[in-house]
Length: 554
Image 1 (spheres, rainbow, N blue to C red):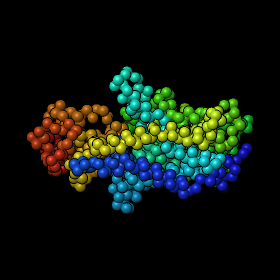
Image 2: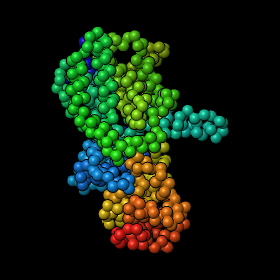
Image 3: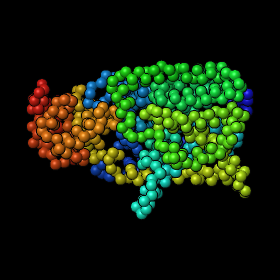
Image 4: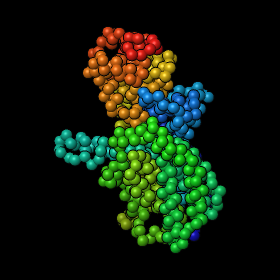
């Protein structure tokens, strides 16, 4: 059995660390342009809230971040039900400690996370390809492909515009172009924690492969320590590790025609330390009633791995080239160890993507790593089939044709953030309301606010929100309808009182947007203004006025 490359102690391709650092800096700068646009073009009446995409999920993460500054286990502040602290996430706990020690707010903490995640991911990927590529040019092409390559996401806006003239069917659902898991560049813009998980997956598999190929258990033990940390912040990625390592053991068993006990031992050393974290998360989502319902509501997003046709469009040219690079399956038995590792990893993601679990879409994370390896191999093979097309030119064409998807996503985020509209920007009076609630505190009470403001209540104030997040808020759709009825006037006075009594609501936020106009809030005797701005106000619930509860306004 040949070892991985010529020698694990010396990289095969002389891709320098300085060049890898330049890649990280370049990705970081370009991916930060949407944020610069958001901060600079927001306008005097609004405030950019610091997130470039999917605000709802990020306010959930920072609700944990805020709770972790005060305790080891976080309660669920995104729902009105009081919940005990039972949730732990290593990444957001570490960020909370850094923020508390350095006195940083959430926006600065988030940008530190983005910078660190980009550096981790690019550094790990650069280290990988400089060892497994045959030349510096091949290593650069693989690194470029994994960092900026994309599929045919640009077809979505194009066909959307053509549909104004012709009845063209849409080839993909609207959410498909923005699936970030297999897209490193879009993750650098919008989901830095995906990059932290990606770097962990690459490092764990690389260390385990190194241990397998060299017969050195120390590397697999190191992989196990990393797998333990991964189990405490992105637990479902353990399924990716198990599929790839199990596939490698199966490949070796098939080639040798006998059980690969040694490789099984390495896989066990790499995955075994992650078992406590996996068991904890399984217990939490199966036995804890709050988190069991939170996981059950994951389907509320309506976001799953797209059907195979749409998935192929999402992955695009890199995927097609990777299939060319893989070649004839009858020759896979003669793969080198590196090829077996990359081949098994690439093939494993197909069935993983369609596992019957609510989080199946997250199992696309990392597919771009072996895809880039085989896509470069595929471009090289194509150059042998097409006259006057050199391998270098083939790789350049492959990169050029893989770039438009991320150009579209990048421009889309710039355009969207330049508008300065919710949920990416709030009216400054609404931000002042959040500041006032944070200063006053809730003493265990609940804040009822329009969804665009209520989403920020837990992370900003530490209070429980009546409506905040599509999975974190239990009975989400029911409560969203209740909030809309409460603020639109469709809910009568007796129903309002009953809602407030039933959920222990202590503050009501009214004001700019969210359907709160047209209701005479000052005429409601059991709501007392305690903070007011022209565009928003905080009203405290006066219990003796509402009836059926003890005590005064809080």
